[in-house]
Length: 445
Image (cartoon, rainbow, N blue to C red; front, side):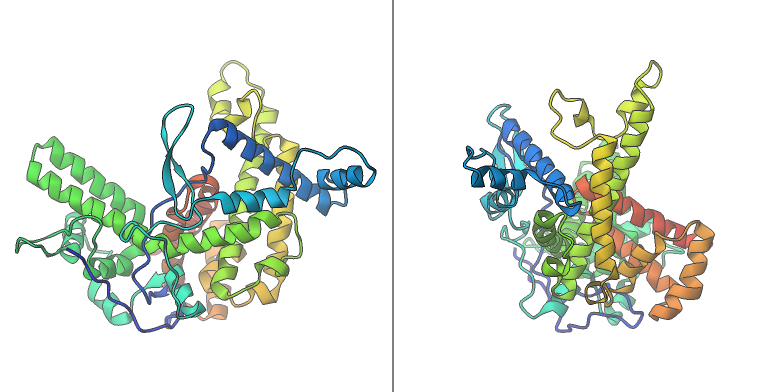
């Protein structure tokens, strides 16, 4: 049975509240999660990481006016010396991107025999088994795909009263919305990977308070019914759980595709302070570029904190476990393929912060961003929860023409999109957004 998807005709990219999370004009854009694993063997992956490390060091040296390895190679060639075996770092990055398959695919590690996911150029649609396709109707529709919502009448129909609803009632509402008429004449959850339009509307209308918590809830209920040896109930609950996971992949697909495209623009240009030369574009593209930059800043700030802790706390007896639990364990390999010392992490972090600051200070790049994304940048400068809430209510919301309630919901929806990104390197930014919206909600219903 094939489920046909309803296409919205509206292209508005702001609701009356001013939120960035808007009506999604097209529903044919689901996806599959990807990883950053692009090598086929451990040796290839290690070489890729070493090359990435060299590119970061060269970018920092170049920004500081120091001679880079690339400059040394040029000087050696101009003086008649033997050529260096290393290729140009930028060309290497581009070549690695071009060498990826069109879609993420499963490969077998030649040394271990383990099945691994090789990241592709495009995010895979779990429903159509094709690449995610962004809307052809223009940048406003692509922004709506990046931050999806539903029309007011659909929201009114499906929005749950979160002050009174209980978990069993919420699960049954989700089941009713996701159910369709099956081929045998009964009503139930459609076979994977099909989804219903009503189920998509329900999840979008309530997505800010579903997400990870609903995934865990459905998983626990599935295991509980199995433990009670109720085979039919366990199968029904498992079908609902898998259907919800498919919906989450479907909704987050365009966001992840846009971020992956932004990585291809920002990554090879690390250390290039001419941000406008590669970070300009339509609004959805600039938002993707900013999220990549902000994610990089959050990631390396955490690495600096971890490196500082490790260097100040030698692994003495009684502290070994706490030290091993901090930072990237790959630093303990015989030939670490990562940057992990305090000096290295501080240099990369400082460059990432400088690039992000230049982006934010450019009105051409940042001035027209939606309230939720702007608040992320502004709120991280405010110290203390009480000061944050005061700034939000008295200053930010009146200036941006959005209510505190709408801003809190927008931040939660932003968090749900980030939750579906790969943990490395976006977990640190995701955690910051979660801390923000929880601090914003203190003292509210």
